[in-house]
Structures are given as C-alpha cells and as structure tokens.
Image (tube, rainbow, N blue to C red; front, side, top):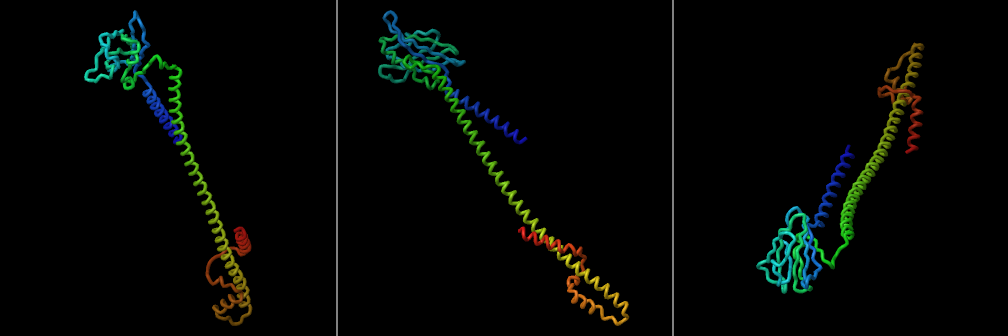
Length: 289
C-alpha cells in the first residue's frame, strides 16, 4: 500500500510539474499577434508601404507604437478596417522620425494599413517600438523565418525542459535508492552482529550448563558411595553385637575414608554416569572455541 501511494504521488507531481513547465514555455513563446512590414510597392509613381497587423487575442489590440517619417500625417494612412491612429504628444522628435499610436485592432482579425511615402528608402524608418512588450511577432521581408525552424526551436525548448525534469527525477530516485541500499547494508550488518553475539551467548550458556550438571552428578556419585558404605556398615553392626561409636565420629570417618566431601551439603542430584558424558561435551566445547 505504501508503495502504491508513493507511485501515485510521484505520478501526480510529475504531471503537475510537466503541465506547469509546458505552460511556462508556451507562455514565454506565445504571441498575441504579428506586425508585418513591407516591402514597398510603387503605384502610379507613388511609393506605398503595406503594414499588416494581426490580432490573435479575443480582445482588441491597443497601444501599438510605430515610428514613421516625420512628414507623415496620420490621416493619410489607409486602413482595411476601422482603427484609431494618433500622434504621440509630448515626445521629442527622433531626428527625421516621429511616433504614432495604433489602437482598436479587431480580435481574431488581420488589419491592413497602406502608408504613402515620399521616397522608397523611407520604408526603413517604419518600425514598431513596443512589439516585444506587447508580445507581437515582427515580420520583415529581409527576416523571413522558415516555420519549420520556428517549430524546431519550440521542440528543442520542450526537449530541454523534459531533459531537466527527467534528470532531476533520476537524481532524486537514485538518491533514495542509494539511501535504501545503505540502510539495508546496515540492517544486514546489525543482524550478522546479533547472530554472532547470540551464538556466543548460547555457547557460554551451554558450557555453564554442562559445568553445573557435572558438579551435581559428582555430588550424586558421592551420595551413592556413602549410601553403599552405610548399608554395609549398618549390616555389620547389626550382626557383630559389639559397641557402636558416636554417630558424628562415624560420619566424619566415612567422609574422610571415601573422600565424599560433597555430601556435606544436602541437595538432590542426578545420575553419575552422565558425568563422563558431560565432561566429554565440555572438553569438546572448549576445543571448538
């Protein structure tokens, strides 16, 4: 369930980031319209310069500033559809040029203007000033761009964005994988250390258990020997009819003779035959260590 949740979160984040990056790329490259100038044409000895304004938006396009020759009157400019033309007041003349303002370019339409010039060379003086600010493409006869090249630039920009996104995602996942592997190595090392420690403790407990068992079985052997002796002694006393020494002296003499000092502590023990087996296991355990 945790893995499914992490996958879903990754997909959602990737989708959101991709959508945002695509929007930013499209927003920075999008155009609200286009301005196409020239080339000039000569009709009946007069020089005319065509100027096309295209509006891609759903609202009118306003405040287009255009530099024109100083002598040009705004009322001499012909337009294919109604537009507002005016001189920009309060702005100092730029040498042989001045600035006019165009507004009211209809939405989703192209408006054609026809500007009459005194000489053909003056058409180089007709240029938009704020087309970058208004996000308008400028199309000049000497700067015609192949649409394939323009599309290729857009594709390259998107490819760069996706490459950066993929590289970041790969770096992030690689970091998480390396951290998980390091954690797994630490866990395995800890488990191995615990296993070795557990084996050592078990070995020590086994040795201690064998030692206790040998000690107890040795005491049992002492009890067994004394029991046999007392049986034999009592039998002799009952059949001899002689005087009997004090009990304490008899017990002390028996213990010294049989060397069964372990019987002085009153505890119950097990089988003596296991002494040999336990001693053998203890010696084997020591050899393995």
